[in-house]
Length: 304
Ligand SMILES: *Cc1c(COP(=O)(O)O)cnc(C)c1O
Image 1 (cartoon, rainbow, N blue to C red):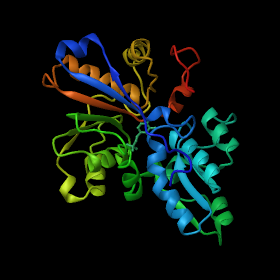
Image 2 (cartoon, rainbow, N blue to C red; image 1 turned 180 degrees about the vertical axis):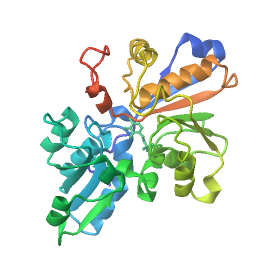
Image 3 (tube, rainbow, N blue to C red; image 1 turned 135 degrees about the vertical axis):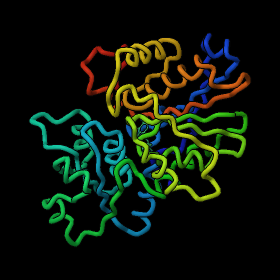
Image 4 (cartoon, rainbow, N blue to C red; image 1 turned 45 degrees about the vertical axis):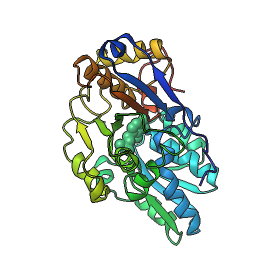
């Protein structure tokens, strides 16, 4: 299933004085650069779902997301490329002006249906959509691609990359699907660390355990102290850090996920968390849609 992305993401070494002082080597896996729209981890999480849909000859895909969801745009783009029709159930009432993320999804052919936050959290299919889907064979992809297929797709992120040298693998965590996939494909000597971008979401542990086979439940850990106020929240320190990180490395990040990942890594380094000689791989999961909700000019780089 490589009709959209078949390139191997680059591993970019990062040299910053702090890492040198701590004798910690760091590299960024640039999933953000594999495709201009289906950016980052979302493609990997989607691919097994889409392969299954095509195999079962189902031409219609339904999924869920928020107004700035990387998953919504990625699904719209991937479905368009695969010749599938896509339906997005969007959290919250329809705003008078559609968010740029939703405009982009719509321009890629996704049909959008808005639903109250309550109905959304109960995963209710809006009646209007249910009527349209009546008699149409379709698949439903859970929010964020959470599920076994999402994990197995994410487990192909390291395909074609020699990861043996790394002692630690870090990623940002929303639903935990990507983390589970990375744990699945990591090696026994590696520590996989997930930086939760949600505040006090301790059910995450269970969500990840639920996906993983028993033999793989050991070599990972979730960190809960790097959310900068909670999901899609940000602090002046985080935004200043993202600008500085971009200046020093040329790597853009978003304030919802990867900004918090890189910020957490820097803080952990400063706290001497990593033993000297550690070699850390930071998984840049892509998706800069969240930055589009910031006032233009807030960051020195854009959201494209
Ligand atoms: C969706 C997303 C995540 C979260 O991935 P999960 O598999 O849901 O944990 C992380 N980073 C970015 C950029 C994302 O868009």
